[in-house]
Length: 439
Ligand code: PMT
Image 1 (cartoon, rainbow, N blue to C red):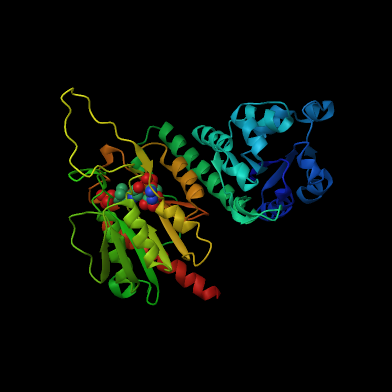
Image 2 (cartoon, rainbow, N blue to C red):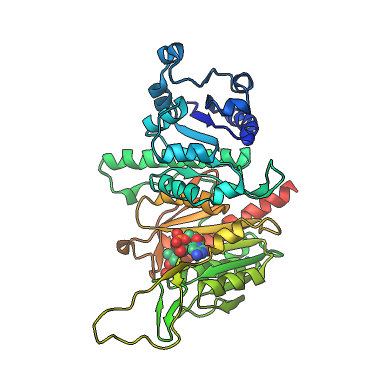
């Protein structure tokens, strides 16, 4: 059955790009209904939207005829997914604060369906704390976001705030609807009281599980970079902040890529594993050192970020060991945010690697968080794993992952980390083989 997308257009110059989005979405057999704000109609006419979508355009909360025909509640319910594009700063503020003063806002207040926003605005408006606070609120409520990216603005400025391209938005739509389907399957099967682990993984293009070395697809001529292990963020000369990553997953991936002939550099935090064979290893301690080592290694064809990078570091590291106070008052640590290596590489505008693979370590709602993370970071593929203590993922030999490749979610059964690495490296090699056939 055709999936239904409700596209809400707000008042930005990027509204014109939505015609292309609608056309491409209809090519993929989506049914599109448009809702415009008054400001949107300053940039694009309902007539063009109707012509391209083949559907009436709705804009008035108090239109008796439209309310009698379908009504805003029905519009909200009929959609499988709501896309807001372009999403202006003003409209994001309305969404964040629950306004219902237009048909578009009222629909968003009435819906329980997934909502994807594609912000577009001037860089100063994007960076303003008010906009960033509104985004944080929306993100906390589970709203998905694609973009914005860097680029030229209508006002002859360059910066962050350019709306994602129509095909990128469509890819995000595909991701979200696939995830929704996967979630429906999971909850349906779960309601039959089968244990979740007994679910068969969804069908996918077969890869022979038992290939011997001779049958592995070659990555000869490609250059790969893999991050692995934890980072350690010093508090003082003897103490640090870190996590439980052992490096087993990341090191196995580096080994599997090298086994297929890729010239592989492994940038790793402190682990107690031997260096993988045929891999150049660079050891680092902190997130900042890891980023610098990765940047020095670029350009590369393939980047896999499997490291558990500490999100925060101590803002001012103490030069001497912190002493206990007579008063018994513990020291307070001020943290600052570490650079995001995966995001930095994914969003490079020059010499970006052809394939950037991130990981998502989650403890709840694994798929939903992973989908949002892939969009936020901008990587091509994302490997999602559950790291709740009961799974033993951190430090253990086995893992269970979902591979999000932008079109589909592939759920693999629980297996050895070395087998996951081998299968992932095979997927990567097959991807490059397919791309080279097209060239
Ligand atoms: O090392 P093991 O014991 O074998 O365990 C494997 C693992 C659980 C560490 C691995 O499978 C895994 O999930 N790695 C990613 C851990 C993580 O930091 O996930 P995250 O969801 O917090 O981060 C998302 C992505 O952004 C990751 O690709 C991470 O490498 C990257 N990141 C995060 C923060 C940051 N400052 N820079 C980054 O590059």
